[in-house]
Image 1 (cartoon, rainbow, N blue to C red):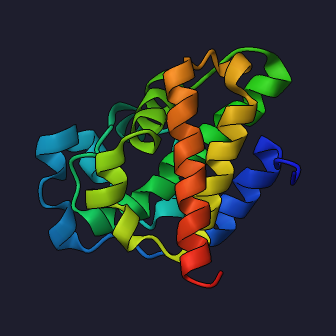
Image 2 (image 1 turned 90 degrees about the vertical axis):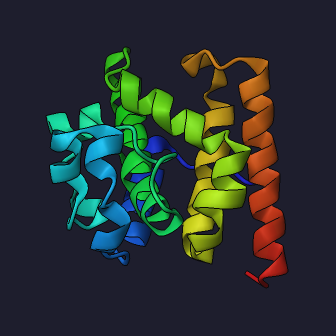
Length: 172
């Protein structure tokens, strides 16, 4: 079995992989104000995923990934993974979570079959998909720290297997 990366290592890798992704097209962000509010729309619209200020009130208040078109959801999934991993890294250092609402949103998205089949899955590059699989593996490993229920762990394990199959099908 391959060793699972630390949150800090995976944070660096996620930033690197998503740094290649541009801001979602403006037409994909049309409903952002409606879905997540004015502050969230300003935090995301026209901003590359790695450049979104994850400490801003717009990011912290926005949970749009299930409402955005697939291209935008796939792009900004990286922002939420960065926030999640940054929070996990900090939690390991200081002993308490710092990212409640965005963590819940990210876990909800990662465990939503609809997100993968209909929204972002078809728009993720193999490299991004690989990172998603690694994040799922990390979350399974950290299940006790995160107090994850068995059904959430099972969904994350299913996601990891699906990513492995998809990457195998693509020859990656």
